Amino acid sequence: MKLTVTTFVTLDGVYQAPGGPQEDPSDGFVHGGWSAPYGDEDFGRFMTEVFDEADAFLLGRKTYEIFASYWPLQTDPAHPIATRLNTLPKHVVTTTLAAADWQNTRLITGDPRAAIAALKERDGRELQVHGSGELVRWLLKEGLIDTLRLLSFPVLLGTGKRLFPTDALPTAYSLVQSRTTSTGVVLSSYERSGEPEYGDLGEE
Image (cartoon, rainbow, N blue to C red):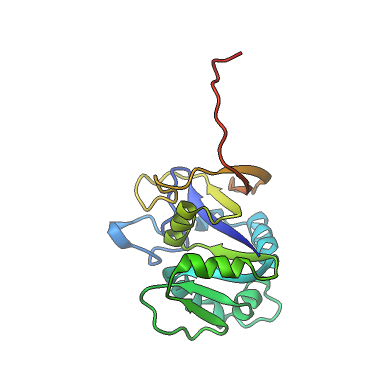
């Protein structure tokens, strides 16, 4: 399976608490819910397309707890996102959870790199990461991401947790898809293409 990341980010790189004020107010963050005004049919259509490609999910502990408090309550069998989240395998990277009650959930409590590598060896389409900012930062450091879907929202916040770590593994990506919603969210998909190449713009 390919490891894919789909994440919401502001123009200044903040990923913290896009969904609501109480999602993650840590460090005095007061901008929770910054993505909500930008939801539209284009956005919903894109997210449905993404979830249609999932065969399993990889989540950080905080995102798992947020998802597990909401999605199991969405029981409409025709809901394209709830159905996949509630039935497909979910793997949670954690050092604090001792058990997980959400159907078809397994905890990764040991070496996450070895466990994730084993998951990627399985047959299937996508092992999807949603949210899970701290996990995504670690995956960027380890160079484990095959596809990076950035949903860039037209807002600057100034404060908040940043997505891209300063010690990320230098990696080149190829833009394979880009479109813009009616509210100005840029939906870009990048495939890992190897190591960065360098040159000199001053050379003829």
